[in-house]
Structures are given as C-alpha cells and as structure tokens.
Image (cartoon, rainbow over all chains, first blue to last red; front, side, top):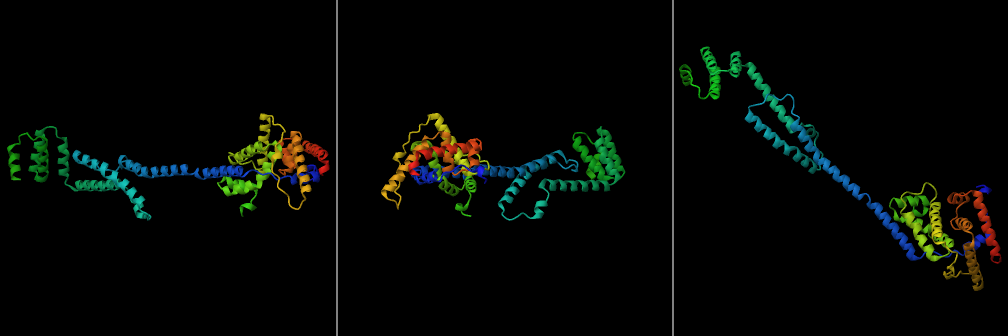
Length: 215
Length: 182
C-alpha cells in the first residue's frame, strides 16, 4: 500500500481510544441475535421438504399412470394384419374380453414390478404386451384358415361363394341339386344347411328332402 | 479447517447454507467492534442496542449475500446506513449517557492512574460525539472497524482525498481537546 493510500494516524489518540473499549452488548442481546440466526438456519434446512415431497408425489403419479396409458394404446391401436372378423357374436365376446382382461394385466403387473426389490429379468422386459400376443395368435389362426380354404376343392369354394351371391331361394336350390348330381355331397350338405338357416320356412323339393333324409 | 480458521466470507457462506455454528464464530468476531461503532456513533446505549440488533437482523435475513466484497465492509455499511437513517428520523442529539456505563478495573495501575485513564476515556468518547458527523464516521470506521482508506471511500461514496481530509480534521480536534491526556 502506497503512502497516499493511508489514512492519517495519531498513535496517542489511537492508544487512548483503544484503552476505553470496554463496552459490549448485553447477554440478552447476544441471545436474541443468535436465536434469530438459529431460526434462519432451521428454516433454510426445511426449505427442501415441500419441493422434495411434491417431486416424489409427481414421480409416483407418473409411474402409476404410464402403464394405464400403454394399455389404452394397446386397445385402440389394433395391428393392421388382423384377420377378417369372426361372426358378430363371437367378435363382440372377444372385444369384451380384450377390454376387461388386459385392463387388469398391465396395471397389476406394474404394481407387482414395483413391489419386487430384485431387478426384472431382461426377457420379461422385452416380452410384447398381452394384447400384441393375442393379436399375433389370432393372425396365425386366420392364416391357417385361409390356407385350409385354398387347399379345398375348387367346387367347394365356388359353392360357398355362390351361397353369398344367391338372390332367390329357387336358384339356390337348383345349385344344390346340381352339386348332388355332381357327387359333391359335402358341399351340397353345407349349402343346404346354410339355405335352411336363411330360409327356414321355404318348402324343399321332394328330391332334396329324400336326399337329406338319406344323408 | 475449523470455523476459527475460516475467513469471514467463508463463514458467512456456510451460515447461508444452514450452518449456525459458522454464524456464532462470525458473530464473536464482530460482536464488540460493531457494538462499539454503534455506541460511539449514537452515544446512547438504548439506540446502540436497538441498532445493533437491526444490523444483525439484516445480515441474517439478507436475501442475497454481499457482492464479493469483504464481510467487514458489508456489515459496517449496514450499520452506517442504519445510523444515518436514525439520525435523519430522530435528529439524533449528541447527548451521551455513557457516564452510566460500567468500566472494569484495570489490574497493575494505581487508583489515581485508573481514574485519570477513565476520565480521559470518557472525555475522548464525549469529544468523539461532538465531532461533525462526517468526521466522526471516518474516525470510527478507521479506529473501530479497521477499514482502509479505499474501503471507507467506497462505503461513504466519497473521494479518497475527502476522506483523508476529514480524518485529519477529526484527529486535530481530538488532539487539541485531549492534550493533557496524551
């Protein structure tokens, strides 16, 4: 420090001043200040409690709601390669099941996973969700059915297709008789069964009645 | 490193992070000097007590830590601002009640010598109180707080030469009035 940066001094006055420095704050004043400081530090230590507990609650909420969001995606995002729908009653039954069973499965499995303290095996983590497994199984069944139909005789396919195209019962019966004459009894029986379901009150010709009773 | 070896600034940071023992160390360092600064400035124990608690209260509840300077300068700046506020509000008179303060007996001195010392100390305190406020402030910031010229000039927002000049006038007046004690 240079001389110009120093304040003027007087050693005699300095000594006299410091000789008279006896006063000090009272004990009560000391305690008041120290208590205030302790309160401030306690407040500082407690300031993390509320944000931390809020963050923990938020994480818990997210953790519990994520499996439910996954489930909704499974229900609404049907895979595009699903086979043609089965008869109405059956498909309704299936859809009811898909709404009920998987709704419990992911949620219960998520809770189960949280309860476990040991790490989840990798294979279990990579396994597709239940809905996807179900869709794949259904796709496999559909493919097998199609294959079976492709392997069936051409005439059967034609008769099945024609069943759908029938407009009049008379024409349908004529076709059934033709199938009988051609010796395709199995196809004729199936077609006749379908006819009787569609037109239960329509009188069958005698030839068909006798063939049916012989069958 | 123990609290006693830490700098004032490190202790203050520790306190702000929730360490109340760091505050106690810091408090012990500035307990007397801050109190005497206030007492010599106000010349009234009641005012000094009140201001003293105010100073520490502001230090404790400061929203932000002081901006990189020394803790000492920070604390005395608060004290000075409070004194000025008080002076403006109440037109603080220079009447002193320090005669009522208890002075401890100093060992190794005769009663006459002690009485003379006490008398000189009392006279000095009284004469400090009679100094113009600007000179008194510079004198106390130097003698009690131990601040440097640069720190005092920065604190009272005045040029260094002005501060030196005020100090010179203060010393001259005190020397004239206390000649027989020196």
